[in-house]
Image (tube, rainbow, N blue to C red; front, side):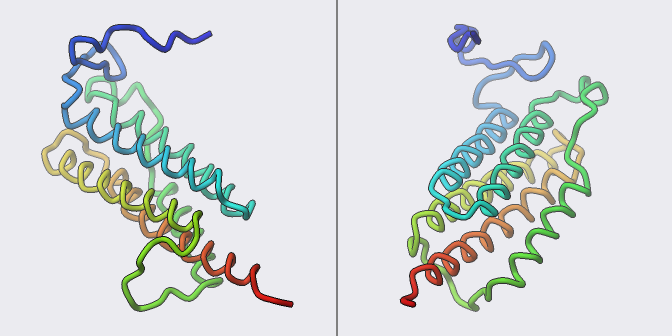
Length: 180
């Protein structure tokens, strides 16, 4: 069984992939911790979603976010050894799913107030957290802490996809509740 409590963080430091330790408030763990929040919020959305297609989309994104967190936790000296990283193909897949969903739902030209459905509201919460993670990743990129621009592109496209997915579940939920 995995050991949950190690005590190694009791002094306020956490490990990156490799031997390097940094303060828990360092921009890297702050950013991948925010991505972890987004992954958990997506887990809530997946748990309450009724549509298997939606559940599958969310699950794949959650898996990809673990890859992204691993990349953010990798210091420059370990980066080439890591091998796995966010790529243009990851971004392209998000764009494909987004286009497919957009063909099934009309996106209104107005501000959306979250809360029409539980699954839509959970997705909107996840989207807001993803946007925060994106802003943090942009800072890492602009400060030269990370070099892979696909990390930022992925988070940017992901927030768009999750916005559209929330509208999709709201529309499909309302269609399912129409009287026969």
